[in-house]
Length: 351
Image 1 (cartoon, rainbow, N blue to C red):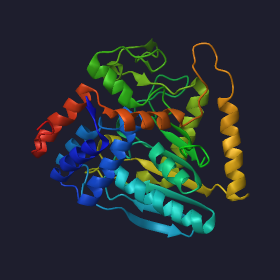
Image 2: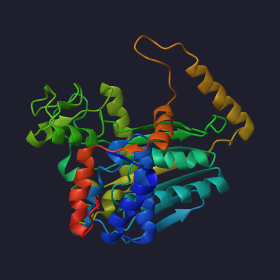
Image 3: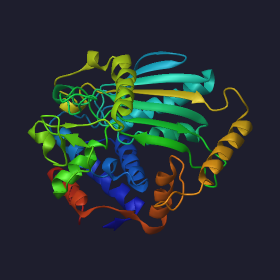
């Protein structure tokens, strides 16, 4: 189906309010999910809404809770989400990190006790819009039931461990930032979930079976298999770095609550590092160099099978342009998952 951004936002807000969210929380989450769909990242758009509604119903997610600062200094903050929506807590943390970096050039904020934070690139884009470079990482997922094997292993110790890095590039015609945003597994777990419900085989390199053999079976995790890091040992090493930056530095294991966060998010830690892009040169000088770099990359002739060379962040920016003119495309099965769960809070999204 195709839907406008405003209608999707209104629908999501209606569902979240019915589930017990405050108006402010519902608006933040709806804005984030719509933005993910607009950026072409469907795994982090409408798809997880059914999880939010289930976890609200079971008390794992507290939809009216607000984040709070546990401790801070002029350049740092440790924040509890108080088990609210991850998007609410993470937006609060990034706004605080930007405020601190504006005053002190650089800042770090870590988050504990929060639900799914959605698309990490959203927060890097927030920093870039404020003239900041940012690193955003999340880890500690599914500690009780881990899903990813380390390089060279067939036992599970880690998870998808996403990372995003963003840089402002304000002189681009549409101001698009330079943006890295991906799971350190071969693909995000949401891609595996969608393949499973659609009965699609997985791409080689995504998973292994319990014996460590390559597999394309979308049910392999249910049968004792594992996801794999992308890029063999290089992706694995980056995955480990994210685990240290996000879970171990934040100390999220010290804040677990057996009644909240469920097995996926109970140990989650998130870390955001923000630095002024003009820390060592004028913003004009930085912006000129950033634009020159992106223009140089895009001027490289494309290899066979490619139409052009893209900068990191171009796919998301191009998807936003397309969705603005053509509307947001939602897969029918993803819409139906959300619709089925919305009925449990008394909302018919198809009415």
